[in-house]
Amino acid sequence: MNAPSASALTSLACLGTGKMGSALLQGIVARHLLAPEAITLFDVSPPALAAAQAALGGAHIAATAPAAVQASAAVLLCVKPAGIVPLIASLQDIPESRLLISIAAGVTLQAMEAAAAHHRVIRVMPNTPALIGQGAAAYACGTKATPADAAAVESLLGAVGTVTRVAEPLLDAVTGLSGSGPAYVFTFIEALADGGLAEGLSKEQALQLAAQTVAGAAALVLQSGLHPAVLRDQVTSPGGTTIAGLAALESRAFRSACIEAVRAAARRARELA
Image 1 (cartoon, rainbow, N blue to C red):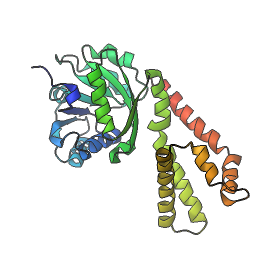
Image 2: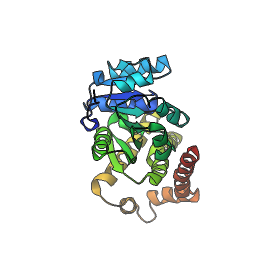
Image 3: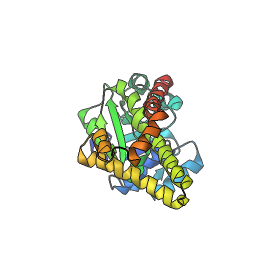
Image 4: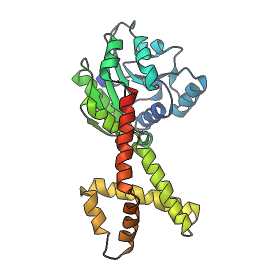
C-alpha cells in the first residue's frame, strides 16, 4: 500500500524527541495541524520518549525507527548530526518513498540523499520559539523532493512561525542567525535585567521589563516595516540617556560581537558537515 500524500500532512513520525523535536511537535499540535494520535515517536531514550508523549497528550510510541516511519507519511529527523546518516540508512528497506525532514545542523543534502535510496529529503533549520508559534525557519530541498513536499514543509513550519526557502549553502548562515539566535537573545535579556538589578530594580521587575522590551522592539520592527536603524534613531536624542547607553555598547564592540556570534555559529555548522 502506498504511503499517504506528504502534502496532506495526515501523519508524522519523529525520530529523536529532544528539545527541538519536542518544541516542533508541541507547536504543531497546539496549532491543530496534526492531532497527537497522528504522530508516532521513536527515541533510544525511554525517559525522553515518555516525556515527549506526555507533553503531546497521546502520541504513539514505536519500538524501532523503521516501525515509526512505516506508520507515517512524513518523518522528522531530530537526532544529533553525527547520527543522521546512519539513521537514514536504516530506513532503506522501507519500500514506499517517504519524505524525510532533517533538522540536523551541517549535514548536507548530498550526504543524506546518498543514504536515503528512494526516500526524498528536505533539510530545515528551525528554532525553539516554534514551541509558542513564534519560530523562524528556513529549508532547502533535495533533488528528489517534489513541489508537494515543499508545500508540506511550509505547512509544517508555517504552523509554528515563519518559514522561507533558501539555497542549501545559506542554511549554515540561517543556523548561525536564527537557529542559534534565541540563545543570543536570551543572554541579552538576562544582561539587560542584570543592569536593572544593579540599579535597584527587583529581579522580577527587571526580568519582566527586559523581556517585554525585547519582545516589543522586535514586534515594532516586524509590524512597522522600518529598518531597525530608523527606529533606533527615533528614540535617540542628542545628549540623552539612549545615546549614552548606545555609546557604552559601542565602546565594548557590541555590534561586532553580535556579527561574530552569527559567523562563528555558521562556521561551526559547516564544520559539522
